[in-house]
Length: 253
View (cartoon, rainbow, N blue to C red):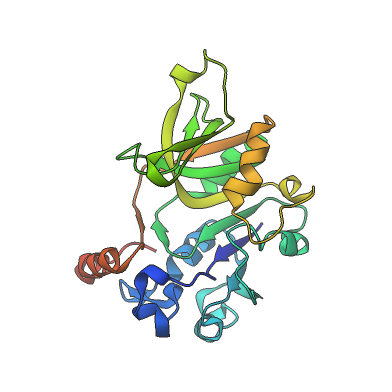
């Protein structure tokens, strides 16, 4: 199994820091932020990883090199223009091959049992399995709604003005009371069949433009509940708070 780590973003909400340092290389707990998803993948036995890069790409490539120092085999997918969270996928079909693959964000830290998530994905014969967590405020984020078997039944995209746009637009009324809302944790496992058909034009978002239409067609998408450690670096305020928090108690790799 192989993986993609998404590291191409501009990190605009962390400016001015990210004017000179790409977000994945910002220090947290004594190491670059991107080390955390890379080590999560290594713990699950995934060592062949491609990293998409755009903003200050050479810094990322110089810092990580071929991944040998981390026990990994890294390659890079440069983007001359940003392709979105889904845009890199069509060009990586041959890299992923015929096995399922993992996609992870470079700015998220979690102690996810990725091996168990992959096993659940395969056992369910899922097309896609998303790592999810319980929402503190169900009205503050877009959300994934799962039935008791953890099958994804509805995505509620939060739009401006606090309005939700649902995919699918209607569901079986008897199913509605069984659904529970979760937040996407930034990691998913994907079967190669998800990339077999025509793809949206880049740039595009993976969940909104690729997986949501699959859900609307009734294809088997699932969630995997993560109950452990989870933080994401969103902006300067959250970053500085995490730096102080991890000065004495660095998060686990």
